[in-house]
Length: 239
Image (cartoon, rainbow, N blue to C red; front, side, top):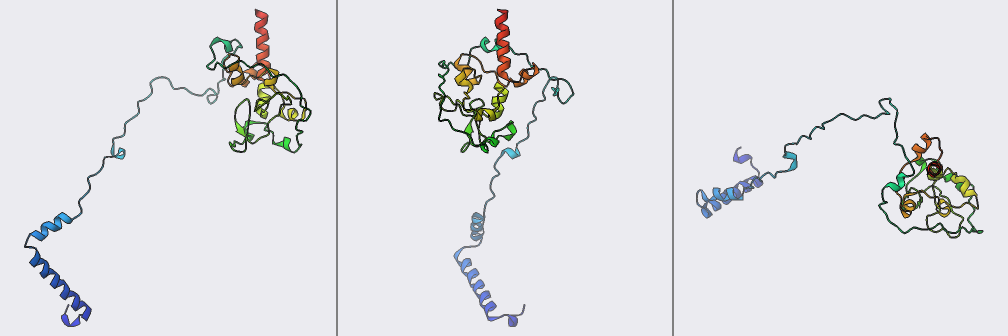
C-alpha cells in the first residue's frame, strides 16, 4: 500500500508501532524477548481422568434358568397356602405392650356426614390421591390421602384408630365405608377388638398378615377378617 494513500490516523498508527518495536529491542536483548513470550504463553492443561474415560465394565451374566411371569405365559397363578397358625409360628419383630379394646360408649354428638361428602369416599386404590399436607391417614394402610375416611362413634376412640379408607374397610373387614359414615352407631375394628392391621397384630405378639385379600377370595371369602375367623374356628375344632 502506498504511503500517499494512507490516512493521517493510519500513518500515526504505523509510527507508534515502529517506536514500540524499537523500544522493546533496546529494552530486551535478542532472544530474551522470545523466552519471555514463551513463559507468558498459556499452558495446556493436563487432562483429568474421569469415569467417562474409564473402560466400561461388563456386568456378569446371571447363571441359571430365566424366570418368566406365569400370567404372561398363560399359566395359572399359584398362591401360597395360608393358615392362622402362621401368625404365631415366628415371634413378632415388634414387642409392644398389649392394648385391650377400648370400652364402647357411643357419642351422641357425633358428626353427621353431609351426603355430598360421601361421594369422596374411595372405592378403589386408584381413586386415592396422596397428600401429606391436607390428607388424612388410614389406620389400616397408613397412607395419607385426600379421600374421606370413616369416623368411629366411640367416645373412647382417639387418634386415627377409627379412620379407615374405603378399600381397606371392604377388603379387610367386608364393610362399606359409605354406610359406616352414615351409621351413627358404627364402631371401628380396633375398638371392637378385631383389627388385623400390622400394628394391632404386633401388640398381640403376632406377625402381620400382609396382603391377604387375594388368598381370602381364592378360598371363597369376601374379606380377610372372615377368612381369618373361619380358619381360626377350623383350627379350634381340630384341637
